[in-house]
Image 1 (tube, each protein chain N blue to C red):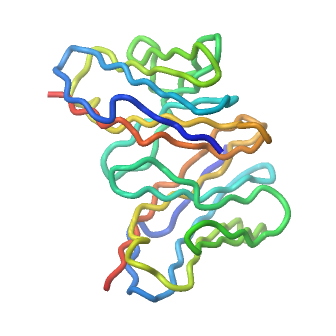
Image 2 (tube, rainbow over the protein chains, first blue to last red; image 1 turned 45 degrees about the horizontal axis):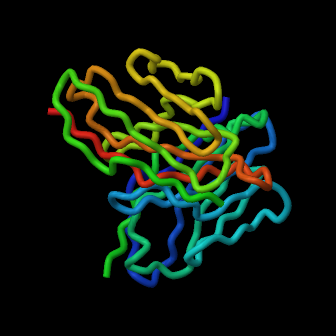
Length: 114
Length: 116
């Protein structure tokens, strides 16, 4: 069965600093991977996804993530944090076999310090 | 992509009553899902809403407590029955499998339920 581990339930960065949110997955098949963001009192918004092809994927709001099969990782980065990036971030893996189900990590709350 | 709306956005209900949440998608989706998200927690899948047939429930969730309907490819409802304070949570619906066959899920804004 697929699983997702997000290291660090809470990450704090200074405004303008690098954002790095870690995600490791386990999957018995080539995975489809996703990052979602949830702002307070809102639903989840898709940031970016990896399905096939280029392993470095770019998303909205300046975020990107790199799929590293050898490390079973899909870490999310942004070169320069902005106050508006403060939110909860969820990594997810598609459960395989075309089920469309996603398995979510426990989430990482990002705080941005002015 | 798909835009998903939910009604109501929030409600306060008394113990023992039921709440029905509606989920509307602006385009046809293959799959629809219902999640529960407790404060500060990740998402827990309740069930997959199947069009024209009974929903598929995850372990720990039963049809009597969480009846689900999906009459067509753009609409679903979740009822939370016989409410108790433990049901206080955010309930999210999502849709997946829009035209183009992508696997990402699109989420509604959620329904915040408080049971008193």
